[in-house]
Length: 67
Image (spheres, rainbow, N blue to C red):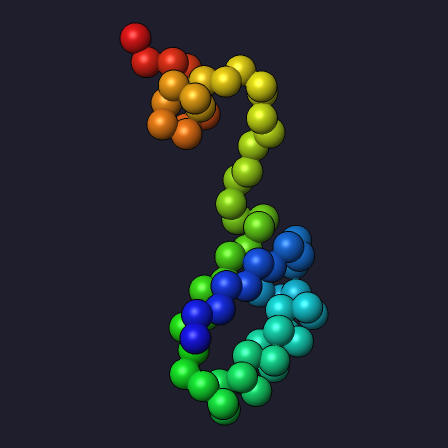
């Protein structure tokens, strides 16, 4: 079973919610093998959309249009 966890807490690894999530995952491990990936939102450096539509010409990437 593949499980993807999004951790939105600014506390990162010290998040209370992540602690509870890990306990939940430990219980799930008793029933089936699992592959878990944790993504911490604070570490992702997500920028805002400028609405410039450059991504439509850059293969989905934000930034200047190549010449």
